[in-house]
Image 1 (cartoon, rainbow, N blue to C red):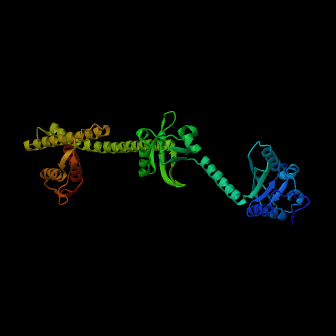
Image 2 (cartoon, one colour; image 1 turned 135 degrees about the vertical axis):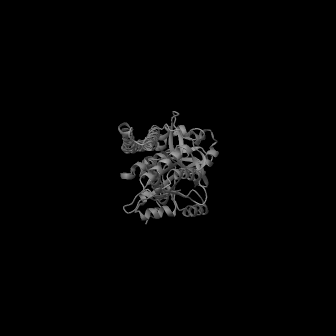
Length: 432
């Protein structure tokens, strides 16, 4: 054990009672404390100092009473030599009154454990002589916590610096506190240019013209939303912006997440344009197919009345002088009927042509679809007495916006085709 060397012990400076009091006070301290004279000699140590010296195998020459601490520091070698030189320089500066105190944190690792200490040296005077109090405090637990916090901070900074989205820290008053590199890149500002500025610097009008607190209220209510951001050069861009409230050391703050969606909007616009073109092409193909079918049908439909007209005219031409008046009238009525049929077909062709060119004069107005259908059916029933025409409709009449002229034409076409391609005494039913 480290014991006092009486031959090296300096003469007492205090009365026995005072020395006992001072020693008891020093022994009560958890720090390793030694008192030095103005030459760097150890003139007193406390219990914690002696215990540490015993545990670590330190000798009287290095750490006991009468040892010169300056010489020990000057002769230090190995890993601790740099810190020892700093301590020796600090002690000498205090003795020469170049500084009032000295403070240093240093590692003191053993093979099985890492330890950190803080050494603090202060000066006082007693009976005209300089005396120094040197205290070594074990701060291993505090250092480990600090290292953990530093590691956590570095990992957090790494995440923030490499995350794709912008992250903005906002005070309760609406001023910007911190932006990660992604946010600075998005808005094209430096950290110094935005720190302390109002959050509305990030937005285009009308949000840019709002007070900071009012803007925060709106952002909290609406959540993550599409807004227009404004860069340093005044250029505008679409962004997703959302904030969440947090409490840090009793203070309310906000974290904002920013995502530049310019490319996404461009892709959406391109997709919509492709869909529009695809729809137009499909529509064009449908119209082309319909036109081809319609032309085929019309060719057949036109051939029938033309053949009938040609037949009747030939009969009148070659046999008219021998035909009875009633027979001549029948041929003439047939020609008149077929001409009317041709006129109706030509009118239908014109309607289809106009619809393709979007030249139809469409004039919708409130009307009763039920009444219009009933009227057209009654008209057809008169001209086609051999057919039975019937309207099936809900109990309440259907009222809607329609163009009576075009709707009548549609109904005429539907009924005409239904009667034409049905048996003579067919039953034709229209359902609404």
